[in-house]
Image 1: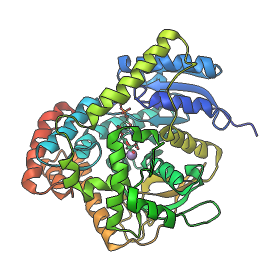
Image 2: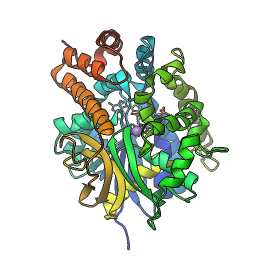
Image 3: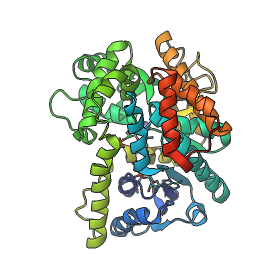
Image 4: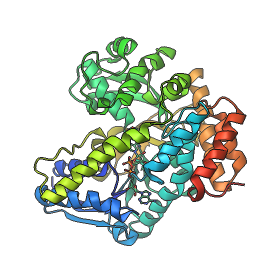
Length: 445
Ligand code: NAD
Ligand code: G6P
Ligand code: MN
């Protein structure tokens, strides 16, 4: 069957992930053919570094695709079927502050968890809402597939502020974890795993995993988890884990798992269950933002500049990993009605039976031309329910604070977070974050 060709705009064209997504799109021309590929960013200079390289890649590998990079929203969002969004409002320099300010007070400093995630949420909400408005103005039938973090807060904000928007918020962490799990249990591919999972973004648990034949994978996985977490017993092949901080996170899953051995955890739970450990091993002067600037950002941009200078990408080191694979697979499922099963961040509405309908949850969904249909995960136990409800309240308070410009609500959000020990510590962090975020945040009163 001949598949109808698609038009895609990548919003956040200057992202460190853009080139990888382009490689994946090009490799998937049989399954997800493109007629047009556009980049959109509000930083022309940054985007042009990536765009100049991707122009060479497209010309060399798929010259039939029209390629264009622009900072003009009308040009970018007109005539598109999909918006693949991954913007970072405030950039990595603001991420650095999100991470370093809490650490000064002995609190977890992390991109999406704790006060750092809340600070990032306050910056991200207007940026993502603006993208939705561009899409609805210029291509009202398009889907936005959104990676922009903090995905959980962004999902709650867009649910409230643009309730009818065709946006699907997604995360690659479960896919990356399942990639390691596939290796652990001896499956070729992560997509050979059929899972049941529930929770919030960066805050969830698996209850079942089988292979496609229905064989239970949990016993073998748990035997491994007890000893090594998600890291391999010997060498590790997952490229993510070449960086030591990710290796630590995958190994620490062992201790996260120990808290509830009836389920299998998302790696991010370490920030909520072992914040003391995380802080003790953090370097307050050199955080993950510094690591990303010194490694991923530097390497991707150097490689892009090399390609642009050489005018060939024949021997490029840019790779399309699970991050790119997941978003392209999701677009394919929506475009071509595949009914694939994927974990998405969606309105609960009964998917977790004993949780509020309006919580944004991460659960398996069937994806087709009709959109997504969440699967029912049933009732969840006290431990997870308690943690999830606390975290949902934190995220709702952040969005309240954004909408109402409320200092009080953001203070409450930080106070309620499991990562923060007291209201006084929360207040000190908040006051410093207000200074640091300046114009990025609404003025709180
Ligand atoms: P980056 O800073 O390298 O790239 C982000 C790009 O967005 C930059 O080029 C920047 O100019 C652009 N941008 C910022 N604000 C914008 C706006 N309002 N409009 C248009 N463009 C804007 O960041 P990165 O490390 O490549 O990450 C990109 C995003 O993807 C981050 O939000 C990151 O957290 C997210 N991410 C999410 C997942 C997930 O699981 N959901 C996985 C990986 C990355
Ligand atoms: C995972 C998470 C993302 C997060 C990313 C951070 O992929 O799912 O939500 O943005 O890791 O990675 P970094 O390498 O930037 O710390
Ligand atoms: Mn994520």
